Length: 300
Image (cartoon, rainbow, N blue to C red; front, side, top):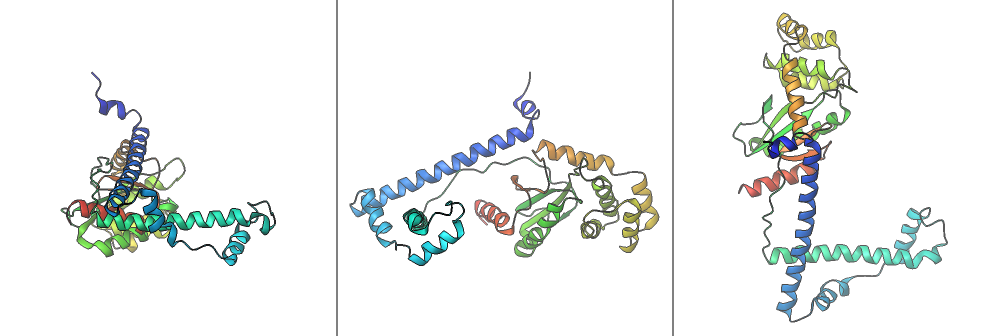
């Protein structure tokens, strides 16, 4: 017998990507279906056909683009327009601006209708099971658990640090942040040893201090430099040196790496917010949108 889980573990990243793509398609189609339904309901309430309703509430309120707007757009896209004279492409630019304005106005109108009809979306997001084991900040019973797979030598992992700091500032005890290792050893020669060094520091209760110190030098630290950092952070030097030299945490880092692969991680940083996967150095507004949605789903 071969279970479905065993099949998916043969190519975990591809299965997770396929599930996410199917979910995204379903969500987009659901959104369109909702819009069509509420427009039909509103048209019936107003005693109009749908085209007449849209003409009254959206089209009639549009303003035509000015010559100045057309000229500005022409300057921006002159090369894409093959440097044609502005008089020749003005109708094309005008149609584009009108279409853009109409789409924006339609989005505003649909948002108003959704609020009026109290639309609720019950489509569950795609989630990936990821163990929240590792150094962490925040209470263990926090409603939101954010697991980060990271690499100390990864430049994009540095870029996501302000986002994670802002998450903790904005949400406080509502979010627990857990750090897991995903060293990209094929391209980052110091990724493995810095990961192991951070866990040696963790054994003395100073993971986050070492975490910050390593990221300050962008992960460009060899064993001697890591030992010097430990001394500067006030760690017990002999214990730290012995831990690093013996590679006490090599297996733990490798276990994190394998857990990340099973979860579909192929690069860093990779964030899992209550199991919802975000890839790359996402800005705060993207991360907060997922957190807010999770809190809403939990009734928070």
